[in-house]
Image (cartoon, rainbow, N blue to C red; front, side, top):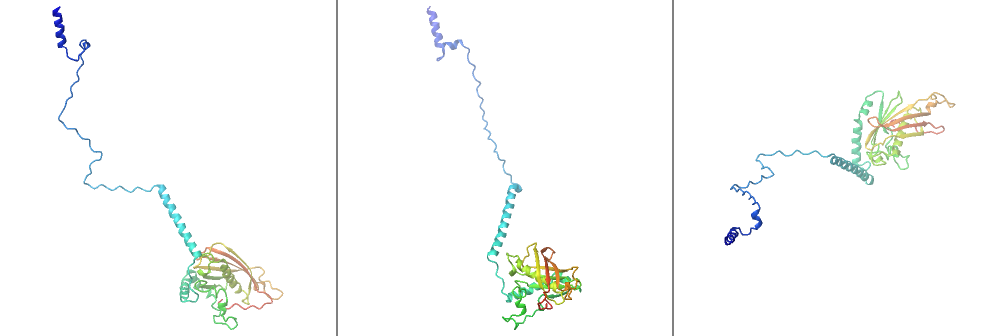
Length: 311
């Protein structure tokens, strides 16, 4: 009995402290394998960007503009152009440039320059070299000397609207007349100055009617024996704007009728006192700006002044 107690005491003293009685009858746990430690250093992660080399790298090529950006630039340029054009016309309409005074040094200089340009035109040189056409400067046969018959002492040239107020570099600075006696055609090369404008840079319709009436009448009066007559009817069709500071060509031709050779009770041919004339106002390239047709007659019972040579 005593021995058994001593053996139990020895077993208790030999048992590790903190161990319970149950652990003796349980399976001992397996120890983890100890971690192996080395003296090697930890390898640092490589940088994400590769190191730059000393060699020069090529610059990236410019990328083309996107369609939307290109379209925006086109619209911007279009609206800018429209704004500039509209602003220019508005400025000219509100405050047009000052024109030189008539018969001033500047006016005479400009008129000589315009006449030189007109003489160099191909149509002028062509008709001048053709012997079937005779030519003269418009109104060259009208007197420019002061007339005692005029109440204001003006010359006959100054008293007429086309050779007076509408003359000069600002008006009809150049008019060369060509007449074909065999066909009866009359061609007039005319220059419209800035002073004849209605709208900015556009010749007034009344100016065109006046010049065409005179040019058509010049064709008709060349056919009348008395070289005189008046306008009975004038029909105009404006097809395109006529611009100022430009040369234009007026072509006129008599319209033949079956009654021209009929002799009336007064013994005068009908064609000698009544004639239709057709004509056009064209650009130098042949574009028609105005179509014209007029009827000219020699009134009975009235004594009219004959058309002067060089009219």
